[in-house]
Image: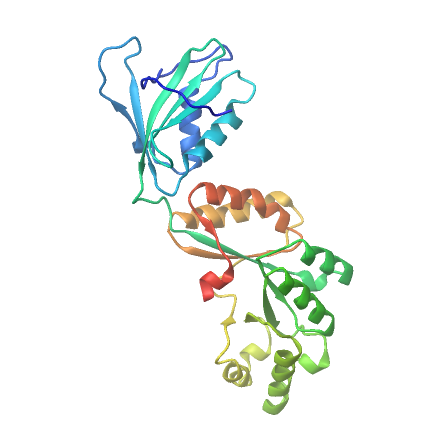
Length: 310
């Protein structure tokens, strides 16, 4: 529970409660979780008092104080320590105290908000792939549960209804152009004539409305064929993607391998203030949520592909 309070700033440096919990370390760990640099926490000059240590911390304007309060409550659950906060003004400077069951102040810090500063400009957009390998019932169930995400799928008669289902959830549909297209009227093969390739592309565009972009599989034979110029010319007014610039994590049967790959991509590149386009298999997609939450905690944003490609 977070409740209002009044009082002076007192930081009991290094105090350990009856459980051996170092409360200042708990607060420092919470700051680290939100990518607040150590230099933001400073010891302030104070008049002589029973506890001579007074600290302040400066937070960026993009980090709401309630997020830190909630994190502290989670960390301190079961220790009999109450998180108490008082805002000088709404969404402004705040005092935070950790108080024991016997009303002893264990920790007190003044929080100042620098509203002009932000922690990170990093963004991530997620694309789901691999759904073509699933059964029709699995496709329908999976798509019905997902909103505002991008999908790479092959053009096929079966997938026409999947595209319609995806679009109803405000998802972005990316059509894969590769050697793996199953239906004859949509195939793109390097032995086809220019006219035949144009017919296939025309059928894809007319039969599958609402295509957000096209993804050209660079491993396809036709991509390395002179005939690809026909496809490239036909798509000159469309959004076209290749695997270049994408961070593709193939399906992993081992959850730990997938999680390590995702963590390496998200948090290594977050420091570079860049936009990440992350491609994952639908079977691994549920494992992604904790890492997206952590990415957001550190100041990043999860955005739709539209915000990246326009």
